[in-house]
Length: 472
Image (cartoon, rainbow, N blue to C red):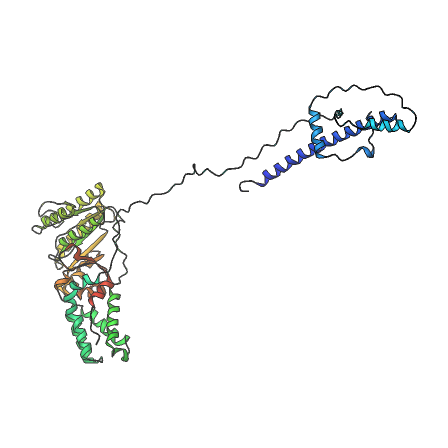
């Protein structure tokens, strides 16, 4: 019984006990009155005096107290509730002598079956009528009809996340030249010689250097090949390939979380790089992807020096449905980016992508101006820019590593976008940048289409890079 406390059970027990005691007292009084009346009748029939108790009441005898049936009790209560009929009592006649007189008196003393005499109940102490105990009010469970369930409706995500699917077959053609440039050449070396000797190590070093991996990264790979693999394992070309795959994966696993474009509104992304690296095209493709994810995008034409740079960005804006904030030709790029961020904040735009003028990493004054752009963005929006991506042309080879080193000294670069991988055999530069700078690669460009700007997946990239590698 849920909802009933111990105190409520105790109260109900006390009320029930009082009610039972009152009933027993009433039954006892009725029985006593009947016994007295019976003695009076017997005394009248036999002519014997009735013994009286103190207070003028007839005394009870042992035979007067007899058990009564339950139906007699109910009948007596009914008779007591109805008015008593007038019974005319005849004067007692003197009893004749002889045993016949006593027998006749006994027969007269018996109650008539047709009409039972009404017993006059002697007055008893007045009992105050008790109010019948009211049933305890229990807390009833709410009716199903009145039960209200609050179900929170699922809120639509502001930016539905795209499901990353690994598509090595689509990526492999874009890496064909890089793969043919040094991966295939390494495979030819392993097929020609079954054992790793000093001459073969020199050949491996030449292949890695011509792949623009970089001297530092190439030496690291060679030393690890010598120290990590046993002599017996070095004779196995398959073991060498597995080692190279694993080390490439380790280079790309920089400790950086995925980009969360929803952590700020507006989320400000600054694109930097030298002239011709593909910044504007990358911005347009990235805007298209963000729009496809349901985000609103605003573009800032911060490259005010290059001819037709603003027109190129406006063309991308009209193609993907993103507004473009532009300034005067040869104007201050910082003011354009400031106005774009302020407009994005007032209009509730999700992402603001700012283009910048191409900077020669050897020009100190131009790098100082780029730092000014960063400071102005921080004044327009606290924490801006939230991401600064360096766009690098893969065809520059090892020169791209030098560019990245200078830019990271002047700016807090948080990501790398490597473009034009499909048009060069020097794609190994991506290994040198990841190893020497420790900056995560965010996107790679392997073609002219929007979908050719691919979010970088280290395992997908390495799998496509070593596709169909010869193991001897």
